[in-house]
Image (tube, rainbow, N blue to C red):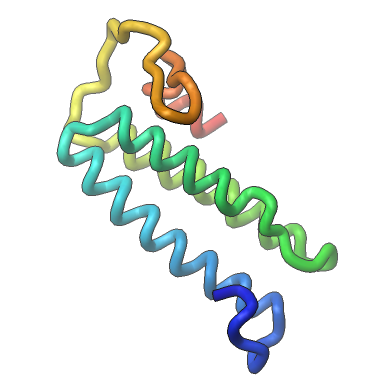
Length: 114
């Protein structure tokens, strides 16, 4: 999708791609958290971040990238905080996914607010 259209300026294309990714991330995270799948939601969040953390665009607009990245952390923290699912207090650690272990801190919204 990034290399397909040349009608728009690169910065605008990147902003539009990230806007779609942000909406998708919000919907998937909300569904996972409301379904009680906290570990899957955390795994989804880290995959989402990994996909876009290096997609900064032109150096003149790098601030837009970091603004967007910080918003991703904020939105996930708010979703985790307002989720109807009880956050486990005693989690057998480390919970391992296919990519990386999930720590006890990652279940706390404060981890993402920081």
